Length: 193
Image 1 (cartoon, rainbow, N blue to C red):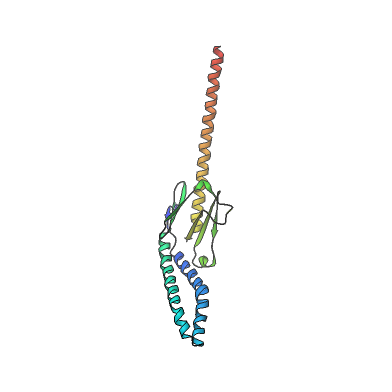
Image 2 (tube, rainbow, N blue to C red):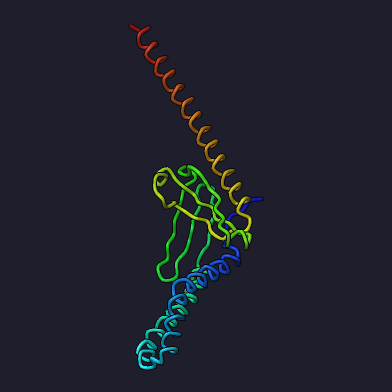
């Protein structure tokens, strides 16, 4: 089955929210709740009112991030063309990455525990220029049928390789033909002398 234009599965947003909740639990609640309890236990109401604006700002910021996650999820799209794959994303700053099939060196499937729970995966596409770096050229995230998408990409890469090889053979034949014609011309000139 050919896959051309697609968006991430809805479970990607759910996995983003689960990671977000884990991050809030570890990064905010782990110190904010004990601090609040200390204020209450030691009757430090004045200190509580000093920190209250700080807590409100953090809560507003966390809500803002939650809204941004939904907007970012909606902005992600992929397009597989005959010669390349495109990745569009971004809320305020729109980014488009285009990776030609001729540059792709390998495609890895990545699934963490949260992604496995939601039955989604990530395809990590590496190119010749990025192979030594930790970051990949392109990630296809939140795909439910990630094995099928990978196979589709592999088929397109193989098709492009076969096409280039056949074009190369045609060029070689035409070069050989040109050399032969030139030799025949030289022979005719030499026979006239």
